[in-house]
Structure formats: C-alpha cells, structure tokens
Length: 248
Image (cartoon, rainbow, N blue to C red; front, top):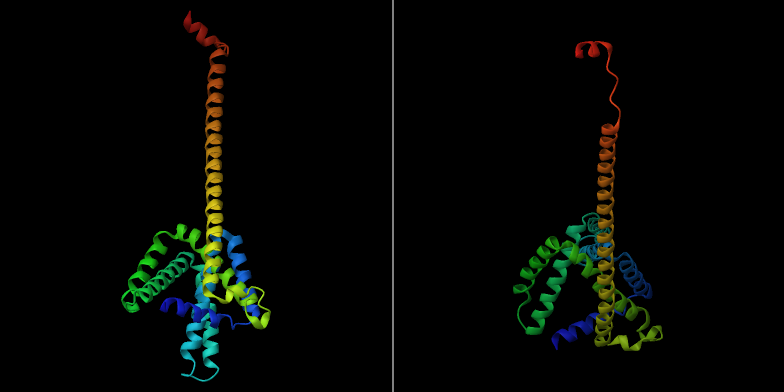
C-alpha cells in the first residue's frame, strides 16, 4: 500500500507539469521507438542528462547563490547527455543500474525493509549486466522506457481536469501502469521482431557473400585448369639447328 501511495503522489506531482512536457515525452518515446536498438544512446542521453540536471538543480538550491544551481544544472545536464551519446556501453550500463536500483527500491518499499540494504547491490548488478550484455540491454530497455514516456506523456497532456481531462482515467496511477504495461509488451515484441529480421538479413547476406567467394574460387581454379590443358595441347616448339645436329 505504501508503494502504491508513493506512486500516486509522484503521478500527481508529474501531472502539474506544463503541457509541453507531456508532448516532449511523447516525441521522445516516438524517437526512441523509431531508432530501435540505436535508440539506446538517445535514451541514455535523456535519462542521464535529466538526472544530472535534477540532481544539480535541487541538490544545490538554497546552498549557493540563487542563479548558481540553474547554471550548474544546465552544465551537468549537457555533459551527462553527451556522455550518454558518446559512451554507448557505459550509458546503457548506468541506465541498467538505475533500473535495477529502482526495482530494488520498489521491492524494499513493498516488503517494508530498508532501501539502503537492497539498492546498492542491485545497482552494481545492473551495472555489470549493462556492461556484459550491452547488445541485449540495448534491445530491451528502449521499448520499456518508450512505453513509460508515452504513458506519462499522455497523462500529463490529456489527463488533468484543467486541460479538459480527455483521458481522465490516467489521473489514477493504476491506469497509467496498465497503459505502460500494454505499450511495453507491444513495443518489446516489435523490437524483438525487428532484431530477428535483422539477424535473418545478416545471415542471408553472409551466406550470399560466402557463395560469391566460393564461386570466384571455383572460377579461378577452372581458369587455371583450362590454361594447363591449353599448354598440354599446344604444339611443341621447333628445334633449332644445333639441337638437330646434336641429336643426329
């Protein structure tokens, strides 16, 4: 119950965001989905950049001059986003670590045990999984987060009553979680099917290249064999006068 209440509180806070934030999340979900496995870099940039911005802005607020937290947050966000784009493996590993840590935190809240005992080990496990299984992580994480961005973006854009409440059901966290789950299943199936078709095309192209290489080798051997036969069938060169004299 405590976890459900915490999720509802977080959703209520998110619904106070401006409408453009919801549209931005929907656009991000669309971009990550279109890019497929390569959307992991965009996802890492968005999550790491947003996380660094929030940590710097809210962590430094009240401690320094009024405008310093904002400047530090922008710099930290840009650097973290660039890191997510450039360092693809490390970016995916950090995202996986954050996912494992969030899952451990939710599980600890649900079981009523201290979060500090569960979050660090699972975060380290996620970091290791992201580094070792980078390719698989890059296939699975983008559709899951794209579904989350789409569900949250739809809730922010069309659920609040002061915006008309077109999708008033998304004011309830259970509906948002249900939409997230349904979209995640669809997008994950699409990502796996796309990856399977890519492997099939790669296998077919590899087989075609091997066949072409074998065909070239056979043609080269046939040409060498024909040249050898031509040399055997060619008439013997005429003997010179000195050779005929010696033979007599």
